[in-house]
Length: 145
Image 1 (cartoon, rainbow, N blue to C red):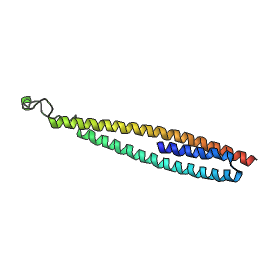
Image 2 (cartoon, one colour):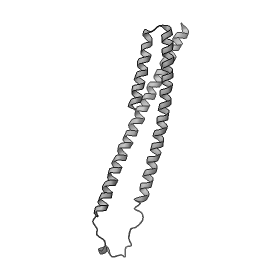
Image 3 (tube, rainbow, N blue to C red):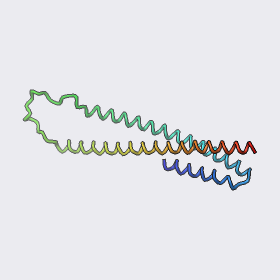
Image 4 (cartoon, rainbow, N blue to C red):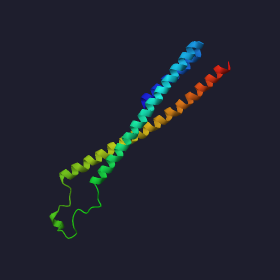
């Protein structure tokens, strides 16, 4: 998303340079800016689709992990002798718990990054919309003159 912001700023810089150009240069610059804005929009759409696919995969992963950690199934009958089982965790169980904890923390971090990316994309689209409106205004002024 930082790259989208950089591209957006570069397009805005190009657009601001049109004020100090001749009419022909300004027209070429507007065409370049328009082409770049369209490319940026296409790339951001592709990025949003990739993010959506990633979120779906993460959701499926979560559902699969719930299947393995289903607590609704009783592990032993009430009539079994509890003295046969140690109530503490084994080293393997502790390692599994630690691994699962790390996996959950990583998933939370990834989700936070996705939320930040979506927020950044929202800002890019707002700015892109403003640029399009501004370009329309400039074209209207040119047509009027």
